[in-house]
Amino acid sequence: MKNKLTLACLATLTLLAVCGFSLSKAKTKTQDVKPTKIGIRNHVYKAPLEVVGVKMNGLSIEPGTDFQANDDWIKALAITVKNSSNRDLLGVGAAVEFPYDKKDMPILPEINFIKGYDPMIPGSAPSDFVLRPGDTVELTLTANWPSQVDIAKDMNARAAMKVLHRGIIKPALAVFSSSELWEDGFYRHSSDGIRWESDKEKLIGVWRDTERYYAEHPKMMKASFQGGGRRCFCSSDSLKQQSRISDIASRPAS
Figure (cartoon, rainbow, N blue to C red):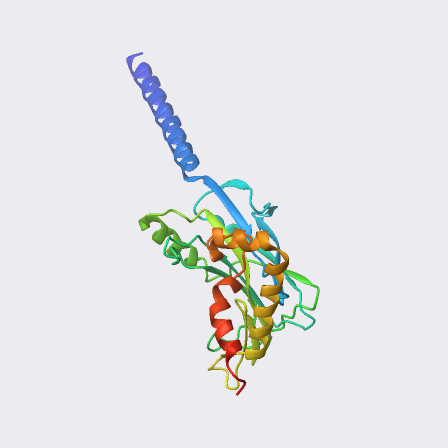
């Protein structure tokens, strides 16, 4: 009888221990989930690529609204981009950008999503991928790139400002050929596949289109500067490039 009581007590204690561990684990998992917000920032001029949708774990995310996610949320992200040019694209890319500090410096590195051909990557070769004008494609992290997220997580843990759960998604790459592409607002070309130069005439066109847009939308210009340019969901990278483009535009053509 004594042995039966002892066994019953041991069974009860084991059950309590298991339940306690499960509750503790569930509590820890809940604590890992944080409010997260994604914004989409397309360019204000006619860029060849635009972001048109975002999903996480297969569910659509409404830009600008809070949702709950853990620190690995970017690994489950899918970004839909659209070819808004009139040419075929051999490679496309988007990036998740995080808020900048008060000195307008990045706190975390950007996380890149790329599909198809990128001639700026050494050893990269054209594939069968082609995105026709007006078509869309969904981008996910390639198999060997989730380490980008792990690096960002580690840097975020050590940073004074915790920004991992505040991301801005933007178009980043559109490849027309092995010698011509668009990257982060700049049209570039290369004669040898090694040195890439900005297309001066197209840069001037981008600057003028951006200037025209903000002349017609003064409230957007104000919002962009109040948001710190790159950090504002509604702003364009062009604001950060205007001084450089203006300088190029003022030079005589060579």
